[in-house]
Amino acid sequence: MSEHKYLEGESRDYFYKIINSIPDPIFVKDRKHRWVLLNEAHAQMIGIPTEEMLGKTDHDYFPKEQADVFWAKDEVVFEAGTENVNEELWTDSKGIRHVIVTKKNLYIDDKGNKFIVGVIRDITDLKNTQEKLREAKEVQSRFTAVVSHELRTPLAAIRTGVNIILDGLSGPINFEQRDFLEIVKKNIERLSRLINDVLDFQKLDSGKMHFDMKLNNINEVIQEVYKAMHHLVEKKYLKFILNLDEKIPDFTFDKDKFIQVVTNLVNNAIAFTDKGSIAITSKLEGDTMHVIVEDTGVGITEESLPRLFNPFEQAERQDSGKRQGTGLGLAICKEIILKHKGKIWAEPKNTGGSVFHFTLPVARENE
Image 1 (cartoon, rainbow, N blue to C red):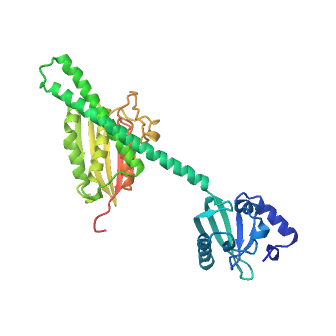
Image 2 (cartoon, rainbow, N blue to C red):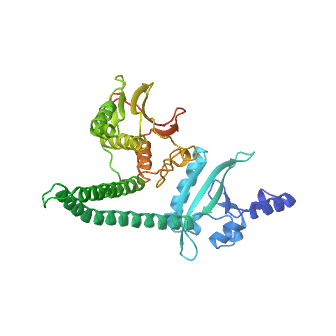
Image 3 (tube, one colour):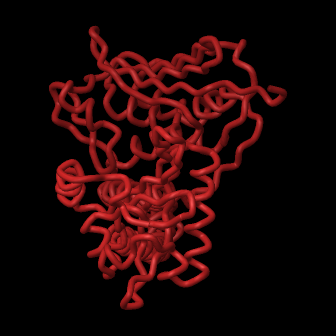
């Protein structure tokens, strides 16, 4: 069968000029799966002249296994009449395998004849690039895990040694020595948090973080953080306020991960608040649970807001230029919240200080 049956004279020439200007291969098949129209890009991709392929089918050129797949997918379009997009493996005339995406639509002419109109895009290079990126990311993940593990071992030994000296088990020390050792201890803890943050972020980023999803109570999480951090807040002579909505029902989430989120937000508030208070509020808003961590500190600059939850970004506070932490804490919080289908954001307060919010959908166990 020839395409001349459907296109005649100048209209055929004009039509071919148009489709041959398109870089993606285009084909049209009739109801018997025979090619009735092909553009030049198709011939270049297949490596077979158009004139030779017209009137023939996939089984005349491709391995039976591939041709059967193409045939079956064409039948779906002919029968269902809906657009079909498939990623397929295809072997060219030189035996080289390609990954292609084929988009097919059904066309019915005025006589009721059915045709498949298809457009092919070769995504082999894209797939190869994606695979290389995946492999590079896997190498990065393994490297981070190994390095972090190797850092933890000597760090644990250093921490133990410093604690032994501070506890006086190795003999008496003077006040100046104690002050220096306290500085060392704080930096050991800071480095330990950095290692943990890097590992947590790497696991979240690679999708390898395990979530223990159980029925829990968010107010219990907040109260647990409150008890654990109360002494740090009091140490700075700040008020620590809880406003908990008892109407919030139990719902499914990872308790330990949310202890990590709330702890991180409170730690940020402590770091940037020198007077006043830190408040944690929970409330039920329809089918959404809303937690707010509010402080009376120096506040967040408007310039910092758009990148506040980006990895390795550290929040710069108003009138201070002071930065705290590893730059991963808030990014980890964001990933944890997103994994629970929630939202997290921050905003400055007009009266000074900052407010961090996160919301979660409340799905009860029996719903």
